[in-house]
Length: 233
Image 1: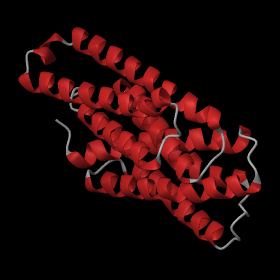
Image 2: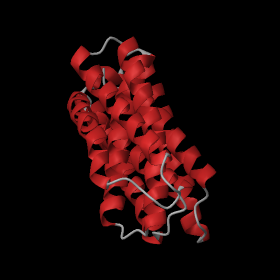
Image 3: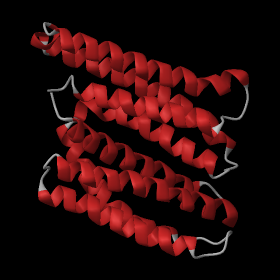
Protein backbone atom coordinates (compact mmCIF):
# COMPACT_ATOMS: atom_id res chain seq x y z
CA UNK A 1 0.00 0.00 0.00
CA UNK A 2 1.45 3.40 -0.96
CA UNK A 3 2.31 5.90 1.77
CA UNK A 4 0.03 8.81 2.60
CA UNK A 5 2.47 11.31 1.09
CA UNK A 6 2.62 9.31 -2.15
CA UNK A 7 -1.15 9.19 -2.53
CA UNK A 8 -1.40 12.89 -1.67
CA UNK A 9 1.18 13.72 -4.31
CA UNK A 10 -0.61 11.75 -7.01
CA UNK A 11 -4.07 13.12 -6.22
CA UNK A 12 -2.98 16.73 -5.68
CA UNK A 13 -0.94 16.90 -8.88
CA UNK A 14 -3.61 15.22 -11.00
CA UNK A 15 -6.62 17.07 -9.60
CA UNK A 16 -4.87 20.45 -9.61
CA UNK A 17 -3.80 20.06 -13.23
CA UNK A 18 -7.23 18.96 -14.42
CA UNK A 19 -8.98 21.71 -12.44
CA UNK A 20 -6.54 24.20 -13.96
CA UNK A 21 -7.58 23.05 -17.45
CA UNK A 22 -11.28 23.51 -16.62
CA UNK A 23 -10.69 27.04 -15.30
CA UNK A 24 -8.55 27.96 -18.29
CA UNK A 25 -11.32 26.74 -20.58
CA UNK A 26 -13.72 29.01 -18.73
CA UNK A 27 -11.33 31.96 -18.95
CA UNK A 28 -10.68 31.46 -22.67
CA UNK A 29 -14.17 30.52 -23.87
CA UNK A 30 -16.55 31.78 -21.19
CA UNK A 31 -17.17 35.28 -22.60
CA UNK A 32 -16.54 36.78 -19.17
CA UNK A 33 -16.72 40.42 -18.22
CA UNK A 34 -13.51 41.96 -16.80
CA UNK A 35 -14.81 41.64 -13.25
CA UNK A 36 -15.54 37.92 -13.59
CA UNK A 37 -12.17 37.30 -15.25
CA UNK A 38 -10.37 39.01 -12.40
CA UNK A 39 -12.33 37.14 -9.71
CA UNK A 40 -11.72 33.73 -11.31
CA UNK A 41 -8.03 34.48 -11.77
CA UNK A 42 -7.78 35.37 -8.09
CA UNK A 43 -9.26 31.98 -7.20
CA UNK A 44 -6.33 30.33 -8.97
CA UNK A 45 -4.31 31.15 -5.86
CA UNK A 46 -6.17 28.29 -4.16
CA UNK A 47 -4.86 25.94 -6.83
CA UNK A 48 -1.37 27.32 -6.21
CA UNK A 49 -1.74 26.26 -2.57
CA UNK A 50 -2.72 22.75 -3.67
CA UNK A 51 0.26 22.62 -6.04
CA UNK A 52 2.58 23.68 -3.23
CA UNK A 53 1.20 20.92 -1.00
CA UNK A 54 1.74 18.49 -3.88
CA UNK A 55 5.37 19.51 -4.13
CA UNK A 56 5.90 19.07 -0.39
CA UNK A 57 4.19 15.67 -0.50
CA UNK A 58 6.38 14.64 -3.43
CA UNK A 59 9.49 15.70 -1.54
CA UNK A 60 8.46 13.76 1.57
CA UNK A 61 7.61 10.63 -0.44
CA UNK A 62 10.92 10.87 -2.36
CA UNK A 63 9.43 11.13 -5.82
CA UNK A 64 11.76 11.65 -8.79
CA UNK A 65 13.70 14.89 -8.30
CA UNK A 66 12.85 16.27 -11.74
CA UNK A 67 9.15 15.53 -11.20
CA UNK A 68 9.06 17.32 -7.85
CA UNK A 69 11.07 20.13 -9.45
CA UNK A 70 8.36 20.62 -12.09
CA UNK A 71 5.70 20.86 -9.40
CA UNK A 72 7.68 23.35 -7.32
CA UNK A 73 8.43 25.39 -10.46
CA UNK A 74 4.70 25.58 -11.17
CA UNK A 75 4.00 26.60 -7.57
CA UNK A 76 6.70 29.29 -7.63
CA UNK A 77 5.37 30.82 -10.86
CA UNK A 78 1.86 30.59 -9.46
CA UNK A 79 2.79 32.52 -6.31
CA UNK A 80 4.47 35.22 -8.42
CA UNK A 81 1.33 35.57 -10.56
CA UNK A 82 -0.86 35.58 -7.45
CA UNK A 83 1.21 38.40 -5.98
CA UNK A 84 0.96 40.36 -9.23
CA UNK A 85 -2.82 40.00 -9.58
CA UNK A 86 -3.42 40.93 -5.95
CA UNK A 87 -1.61 44.20 -6.67
CA UNK A 88 -4.13 45.07 -9.38
CA UNK A 89 -7.41 46.87 -8.91
CA UNK A 90 -10.51 44.77 -8.29
CA UNK A 91 -11.82 44.51 -11.87
CA UNK A 92 -8.43 44.18 -13.53
CA UNK A 93 -6.75 40.89 -14.42
CA UNK A 94 -3.54 39.50 -15.85
CA UNK A 95 -3.07 38.37 -19.44
CA UNK A 96 -4.65 34.91 -19.48
CA UNK A 97 -1.65 33.42 -21.31
CA UNK A 98 0.59 34.22 -18.33
CA UNK A 99 -1.18 31.51 -16.34
CA UNK A 100 0.03 28.92 -18.83
CA UNK A 101 3.54 29.59 -17.50
CA UNK A 102 2.30 28.07 -14.27
CA UNK A 103 0.26 25.41 -15.99
CA UNK A 104 2.79 23.93 -18.39
CA UNK A 105 5.19 22.38 -15.80
CA UNK A 106 2.17 21.24 -13.77
CA UNK A 107 0.54 19.61 -16.78
CA UNK A 108 3.78 17.88 -17.73
CA UNK A 109 4.13 16.48 -14.21
CA UNK A 110 0.46 15.44 -14.20
CA UNK A 111 0.85 13.64 -17.53
CA UNK A 112 3.64 11.51 -16.08
CA UNK A 113 1.64 10.82 -12.91
CA UNK A 114 -1.54 9.90 -14.81
CA UNK A 115 0.36 7.51 -17.06
CA UNK A 116 1.59 5.74 -13.93
CA UNK A 117 -1.83 5.76 -12.22
CA UNK A 118 -4.25 5.55 -15.14
CA UNK A 119 -6.79 3.58 -13.08
CA UNK A 120 -7.57 6.78 -11.18
CA UNK A 121 -8.02 9.07 -14.19
CA UNK A 122 -11.82 9.28 -14.07
CA UNK A 123 -11.80 9.72 -10.30
CA UNK A 124 -9.35 12.60 -10.67
CA UNK A 125 -11.54 14.15 -13.36
CA UNK A 126 -14.57 14.07 -11.06
CA UNK A 127 -12.61 15.65 -8.21
CA UNK A 128 -11.05 18.28 -10.48
CA UNK A 129 -14.44 19.27 -11.89
CA UNK A 130 -15.76 19.68 -8.34
CA UNK A 131 -12.76 21.83 -7.37
CA UNK A 132 -13.17 24.00 -10.47
CA UNK A 133 -16.91 24.39 -9.82
CA UNK A 134 -16.26 25.37 -6.20
CA UNK A 135 -13.72 28.01 -7.22
CA UNK A 136 -16.06 29.40 -9.89
CA UNK A 137 -18.91 29.74 -7.40
CA UNK A 138 -16.55 31.43 -4.93
CA UNK A 139 -15.67 33.84 -7.73
CA UNK A 140 -19.40 34.60 -8.18
CA UNK A 141 -19.43 33.60 -11.82
CA UNK A 142 -22.51 34.13 -13.99
CA UNK A 143 -22.07 31.16 -16.33
CA UNK A 144 -25.16 29.23 -15.30
CA UNK A 145 -24.55 26.65 -18.01
CA UNK A 146 -21.49 25.46 -16.10
CA UNK A 147 -23.61 24.97 -12.98
CA UNK A 148 -25.53 22.38 -15.00
CA UNK A 149 -22.67 20.97 -17.07
CA UNK A 150 -20.06 20.32 -14.37
CA UNK A 151 -22.24 18.19 -12.05
CA UNK A 152 -23.27 15.92 -14.91
CA UNK A 153 -19.67 15.74 -16.11
CA UNK A 154 -18.76 14.70 -12.57
CA UNK A 155 -21.51 12.07 -12.59
CA UNK A 156 -20.25 10.65 -15.88
CA UNK A 157 -16.66 10.58 -14.60
CA UNK A 158 -17.75 8.89 -11.35
CA UNK A 159 -19.64 6.18 -13.21
CA UNK A 160 -16.69 5.61 -15.57
CA UNK A 161 -14.39 5.41 -12.56
CA UNK A 162 -16.48 2.71 -10.89
CA UNK A 163 -16.67 0.71 -14.13
CA UNK A 164 -12.90 1.02 -14.66
CA UNK A 165 -12.15 -0.12 -11.11
CA UNK A 166 -14.53 -3.09 -11.43
CA UNK A 167 -12.83 -4.15 -14.68
CA UNK A 168 -9.43 -3.72 -13.04
CA UNK A 169 -10.42 -5.96 -10.12
CA UNK A 170 -11.91 -8.61 -12.43
CA UNK A 171 -8.62 -8.72 -14.34
CA UNK A 172 -6.67 -8.97 -11.08
CA UNK A 173 -8.48 -11.70 -9.19
CA UNK A 174 -5.73 -12.02 -6.56
CA UNK A 175 -6.64 -8.57 -5.26
CA UNK A 176 -10.20 -9.72 -4.55
CA UNK A 177 -8.84 -12.36 -2.19
CA UNK A 178 -7.52 -9.63 0.09
CA UNK A 179 -9.98 -8.26 2.64
CA UNK A 180 -8.37 -4.81 2.48
CA UNK A 181 -9.15 -4.56 -1.22
CA UNK A 182 -12.87 -5.07 -0.66
CA UNK A 183 -12.84 -2.56 2.19
CA UNK A 184 -11.06 0.08 0.11
CA UNK A 185 -13.42 -0.49 -2.82
CA UNK A 186 -16.53 -0.12 -0.66
CA UNK A 187 -15.23 3.06 0.96
CA UNK A 188 -14.01 4.54 -2.35
CA UNK A 189 -17.23 3.83 -4.24
CA UNK A 190 -19.46 4.97 -1.34
CA UNK A 191 -17.62 8.28 -1.04
CA UNK A 192 -17.69 8.87 -4.78
CA UNK A 193 -21.42 8.18 -4.98
CA UNK A 194 -22.08 10.39 -1.94
CA UNK A 195 -20.14 13.26 -3.51
CA UNK A 196 -22.03 12.88 -6.77
CA UNK A 197 -25.45 12.87 -5.06
CA UNK A 198 -24.55 15.98 -3.05
CA UNK A 199 -23.35 17.66 -6.22
CA UNK A 200 -26.60 16.91 -8.05
CA UNK A 201 -28.82 17.98 -5.15
CA UNK A 202 -29.01 21.69 -6.19
CA UNK A 203 -29.97 20.55 -9.69
CA UNK A 204 -32.86 18.53 -8.30
CA UNK A 205 -33.98 21.46 -6.15
CA UNK A 206 -33.34 23.89 -9.05
CA UNK A 207 -31.30 26.20 -6.85
CA UNK A 208 -27.85 27.75 -7.23
CA UNK A 209 -25.11 25.52 -5.79
CA UNK A 210 -23.67 26.99 -2.56
CA UNK A 211 -19.89 27.16 -2.20
CA UNK A 212 -19.79 25.16 1.11
CA UNK A 213 -21.65 22.28 -0.53
CA UNK A 214 -19.22 22.23 -3.46
CA UNK A 215 -16.28 22.33 -1.05
CA UNK A 216 -17.71 19.24 0.66
CA UNK A 217 -18.15 17.55 -2.73
CA UNK A 218 -14.56 18.33 -3.69
CA UNK A 219 -13.21 17.10 -0.35
CA UNK A 220 -15.19 13.85 -0.41
CA UNK A 221 -14.16 13.20 -4.02
CA UNK A 222 -10.54 13.84 -3.08
CA UNK A 223 -10.66 11.32 -0.20
CA UNK A 224 -12.25 8.82 -2.60
CA UNK A 225 -9.32 9.28 -5.01
CA UNK A 226 -6.89 8.55 -2.16
CA UNK A 227 -8.74 5.33 -1.32
CA UNK A 228 -8.75 4.30 -4.99
CA UNK A 229 -4.96 4.35 -5.12
CA UNK A 230 -4.84 1.63 -2.47
CA UNK A 231 -6.55 -0.68 -4.99
CA UNK A 232 -4.03 -0.21 -7.77
CA UNK A 233 -0.93 -1.62 -6.11
